[in-house]
Image (cartoon, rainbow, N blue to C red):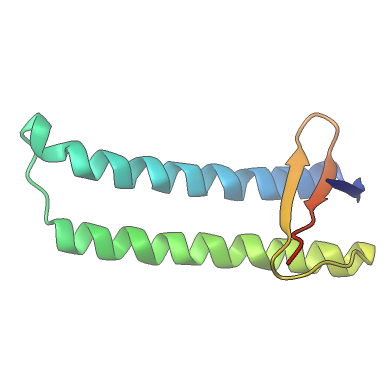
Length: 99
């Protein structure tokens, strides 16, 4: 893992909100599978379509955040690399993927 740097308070709030939105969508997808156990009838096709569309949009916004932030700070990375961050310290890390 390689430390890239520290982002601003506003930047960490932005990426944290995006990751929270992604986690909420994942929870909804899991809950949707359990709805029938609770006696809740859903139009699963419509719900699945909406959730996958929303997930694609939030992933695109996460990727856009990383791209803009990396460009702003001059961070270099490969598409296969994985990002992580520490909310408390606002540090951003890169997990280098060796091919």
